[in-house]
Length: 149
Image (cartoon, rainbow, N blue to C red; front, side, top):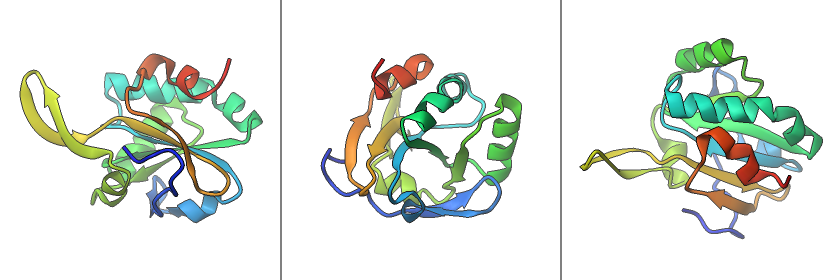
């Protein structure tokens, strides 16, 4: 994982609507940038819905939320519509952002080693510095890992 206190790597990509989104769009704002493996799978849905259910808390504390996976924009549109997600999702189909944020790598599942998305979340401050990183995401209670009670 990237180190707390370092500058967040610059990124740009297309969201579910084909709109270009970049790190500079969030300058002066706090950003929860979360990486997840696949739209509409149980763990990813639980994580997205937890963030959705607490979205107003994030906004009230000055945070924006942005998700990234290698799914297509069309898949993101379906995921957002099905679960009424209020935040944007970047379609990182070429893995550029995932690799820049060290959220792509070796995983072990059922004793088999594969490459894939490493579920990871970074909190980036108003100046673009990483102030928190979560590598062991509790999908059902992710907000409690990010925000003080």
